[in-house]
Amino acid sequence: MYSRILQYAAVAAVTFAGWSAALPTVERGVQTPPLVRIKRAAPAFEWDYSLPNAQEQREKAGEAWVGMILLANMVYHKNIDPNRWPRIFKHYFNDEDQGKVDKIFSMLVGEGEKEDPNGGAAFMSDIIITNRPVPKHEAKCDEYGTVAFTAKINITPPKFVIRLCDAAYIYPLYTKTGCDKLGDTASGWMATLDGVILHEMMHVETLCIPATGKYIQDYGLAGYGPKNTRSFKDNPANEPTNNADQYRWYAQELFWTELCDKEFKDATMNDDYPELEPPPKSSPPPPPPAVVKTNALSIIFQKSLDEIGEGYDWLFFPGKKGEAMLCHDQKDSWHFTSQVGMNKDGIPPWPTGTFHFDNLFGRVCDYKNDGTDNPGMLWCKDKDGQNLKDVGIQCYSDNMRTTKTTKQCTKSGLIPSIDHVAVAYCEW
Image 1 (cartoon, rainbow, N blue to C red):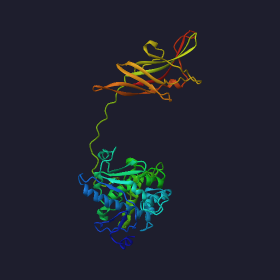
Image 2 (spheres, rainbow, N blue to C red; image 1 turned 90 degrees about the vertical axis):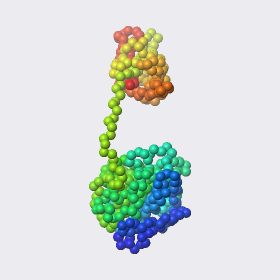
Image 3 (cartoon, rainbow, N blue to C red; image 1 turned 30 degrees about the vertical axis):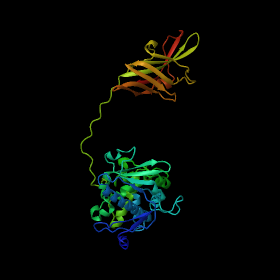
Image 4 (cartoon, one colour; image 1 turned 180 degrees about the vertical axis):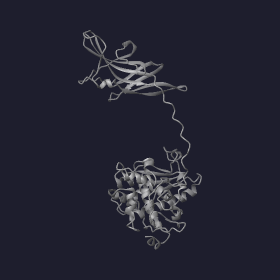
């Protein structure tokens, strides 16, 4: 109950390995709930103070980290009002999910684990929080809508970096949000930077895999926000414990329900924090016109029979898209001998190897196939400025190959006899 919150000090402290952080007093009359005093490992903050607003952002990130632990502590201990959390839990998870969800928050608050029997959330030493560009992800923060992201930067030992983009700092700390701002409905006004970090923590493999058995991921718009996370849970095809934003909104709604001592109505809007820049209203540019394919390379398997015996050949016919090349004159093709005939089911092989064409519609090309049951690829040289580059053209299997169908190209009884099977084609 709210009266139980008030009997604790308004400012709680969390002691980490080597440092402590005092939670600031909450604005507009909201009292800070108690936080169990626990010794724990802590992430490393790697900060470039030459970047704009670096000092202010570093201070805010540090406070948000402590606030994230407070969120997790309240969710895990459920020691405020035991009648509330089951109702809120069912907004975001199914009953059978409770064990996995409890394990996530147990690890966040530093309860003992098999690999960490004395507690302290040792996995947190695997984490770096930064304002610097992350190698191989330098442009990620420039993508529209990206607030923060988590990347694995080392496999053994595992290391994860949480990059807080500039947009993350638009979110307030929970200490700067008051009950009077939240209204009566669960909404994006409940969102905080503390919750953003909680969301990113779900992507840390040394947390999520021991707790749930799987990597916790994002599901795009369908799995984000105060309204869509509820819809996500209600879809029986989804696994709520596998969606990172379920944990954030579960924690935030429970947190504000307890702090404000009120029941919030179901979310009707899916906006995250409302002061984030809204999506652009302009229509996206039309897609470029589709490239019209006019050329084709038809790949024919030829079986011949003469006085000596059977022979097999590959014929590559250039032509127009859609033009049938069965029984065309062999001299109009590139001709290669095949060492392999049809199998016992009457199905020809794939043209395995590299086949060179010195002038295929004015280009030098090679057809390549590794023989592993695929129609192969055509590679042609194209000019790129003063240089040539290889351009891949997808090839496709012809239905005739697998239907035991052959085209007889000579009259019955004549020697030599010639049969054709269309095996594949490439179009561009």
